[in-house]
Image (cartoon, rainbow, N blue to C red):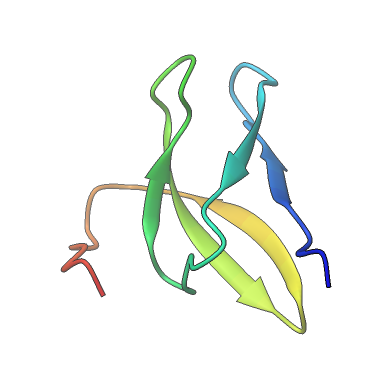
Length: 61
């Protein structure tokens, strides 16, 4: 069974990039092109990016 790739789009520069298969809700990621930081949100199987404002700590969960 093939796994579905989790591809998201940066809201700053428009770059599409792939998230790791084991990404979790609340995890922090950044755009590989411009470095914009986001909080990964997973709801009902849909993955979205929320702007990271610097007030959330990523403990590597």
